[in-house]
Image (cartoon, rainbow, N blue to C red; front, side):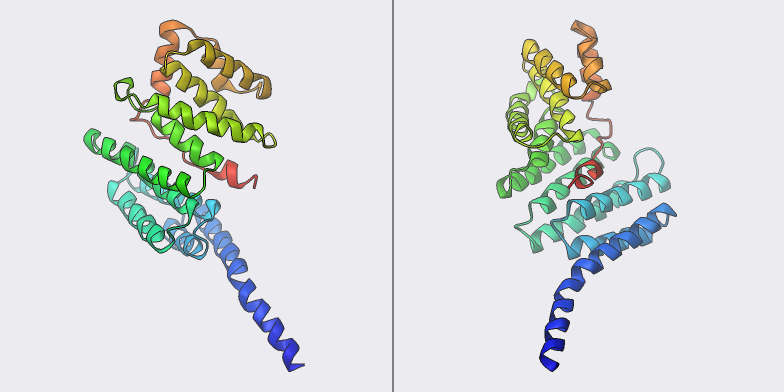
Length: 259
């Protein structure tokens, strides 16, 4: 009997952290629902620390910080709040240098700060974000990491010559999704890869990939809008979409919700 109890207690001990992490996450979601941001953020930090490679926990933590700072400082929030978030992820990746998703969200923490920062700082933040996305890809070249870095390159003005790098990443993400079951978020690659082709003066390829995407996602307004425009109208549209001063949606719920 003692031996069996020992086995049971050992199993319970090792299973507890997983259950605990989910329980903490659920409590954080309840706090978010009631707009108790400090409690939600504190709980989500614990959830991330308990599972550093969780796409869900880290993404929801970042969004909780964003909601809190925008609520307290309307429009784009306070840079100080994002600095705390960045420091949290910096510590996390130091303690877990093999976690690809930790580096991915570390990069996103810099992206989250960009709209709240000044123009000169924005360039530094964008470069630093790319560094973290690259580390994530080096650890594990996932669809989301390749898409993220590829899409990020497209926000740089043409003079920097980074659109070609974006196309290379997005083509790899496109290859990954072709070998996978269809996911709702795959539409993002069709949109961004077309934008990349457009920025590298390959309009025919841009139109072709947008049309291919529309056959799979016929309700995509982003694809329909691009295909309905030409010339200067299309340029104005894409330049507006890829305006670095506008906040980028870094919510990963669509991804982790389908895992």
